[in-house]
Image 1 (cartoon, rainbow, N blue to C red):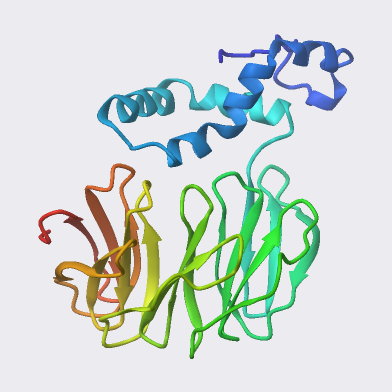
Image 2 (image 1 turned 135 degrees about the vertical axis):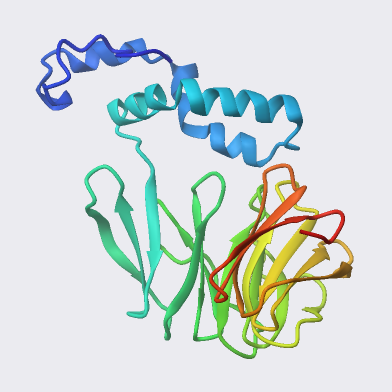
Amino acid sequence: LRFNICDLPSSFLPDKDVPDIEDRLRNISDTLNYSCTHWGYHIARSNGNERLMKALDNFVENKSVFWIEAMNLMKKLPVIVSGSDDKTIRLWDTATRAQIGDPLQDHDGSVRSVAFSADSTMIVSGSYDRTIRLWDTVTRAQIGDALQGHNYQVNSVAFSADGTRIVSGSDDKTIRLWDTATGAQIGCPFQGHDHRVSSVAFTADGTEIVSGSDDLTIRLWDTTTGAQIGNPLQGHDHWVTSVAFSADGTRIISGSLDKTIRLWHAATDIR
């Protein structure tokens, strides 16, 4: 990656108006094309070691603008996905801000949470209709039947980094794990929260799940055994609305209706 990788004659000239743009695009090799498109997928599936994280920091600081330029030239700038109270899921082009194709429809209630798989081939959605649904991003068709098991609305869904599992959190106070290929629930629900589960997330290696709840706590779970890891993380004075792991899995960040954001050490159960 480098500045003006395709040697365009002027930054004021739209790419489509460059007469020999296709020839210039050959400056982006197949290897670079793949790297630009899929580096995030490989990072997500890594163990987040210190050397890799330093390399990622260096990339973001020194090369991210060149990456955006290359992605724009290849017409591969990221697509975002949204879910709405209108019961639909929509895809958007982040460069043009235009909606891509027709909405994805099948939910019978508000869509509360959506997420891409790491390779961007699938979307998962969770809804007030108590179901979780999988969608093919290319064909835009629903994949298989709806995943059912929650007794109340689904508030949060997420893919594991390898795309083989989905985690969901619900108003029924449980967290559930699902097999992406079969749609079957894996094991028993994870139970421990005293109120609705508002947010869930996997560690990058898929071995742990973090959940946030209206019971004011954050909890860690072992994905293999379904057991809670350690004591609940306590400190928020109001409902916990969002949780996420750092890339290396050592820290957790949480947001709450108490208007604060808090950082936690995953291994020590303290802020």
